[in-house]
Image 1 (cartoon, one colour):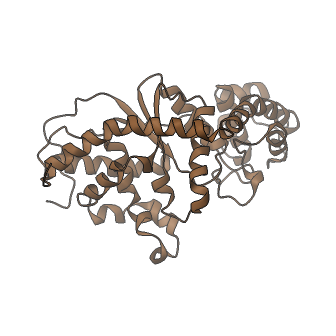
Image 2 (cartoon, one colour):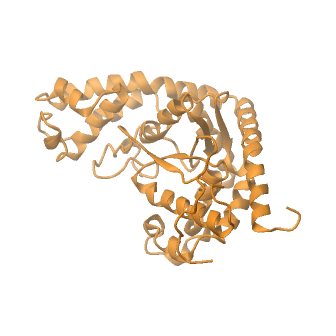
Image 3 (cartoon, helix red, strand yellow):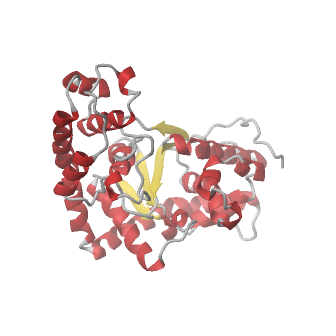
Length: 348
């Protein structure tokens, strides 16, 4: 085996188109998750065979409280459903309930090269100055991510800028596996679905920082479980500057907080930033914020209400997750069986 990803051999993947994505159950979901992922998942289920999982195996690369993890998984599932995902159309499941993910990840760890992982910038960012104290899982999780994608032979993956490098790694692993085990076209080369408007929602307290569930200030984000009063209050207190809204996108881009709020308005209303500016250019935030708050309450309050209703019935959520895991295994298990045969394992 070589250390470099080889040129793809003859024989392109000819299987069905399929999309896969997931969210970690490591904290409350917020507006950024909703606009950047959930509403897109809900749209995709009508266009392509869709697999959406709760990434609990990924979550434990950093410490998670065991007593809370199952409920956090249910909360992500409730958010999926509240945002419009339909278990009759999309396969919704917990990652850990499909053991084939971990099994394929080990095989891929033996295909991927150390140098490929050394180039992954996310590990450097997440481990900071204490690399030696980080879990091995945090270092190798891009390989598990490749297994998540390829076990379903997903052809498309919604990604933001921070995950594009990991998708390239997935493509390298697929290419190298197909080459090393003389199985051209066995695994596809998944393509990115680059997220559009709303893909990168910034903090309401700092327009230069991405909205995050780990930010210590609850006023930095709008949680999906926030009620109408909380949503409106956070919009009202969002950081801005004293100038009125500009007429051009070029000027807007130089004003981080204004750009973020206009982007949120655009994403929630299904319009472009230019269209929003056409209505509000020259107006101050005293006029713009109330309009944004009204829109945000209209769009998000029903999602939170539905989530709270779903979370009150754990049994139904568990039934949906179990049924989704069964459907996922119907696809994952044959893939792993074929992989074992290609690798040469006894009994395969």
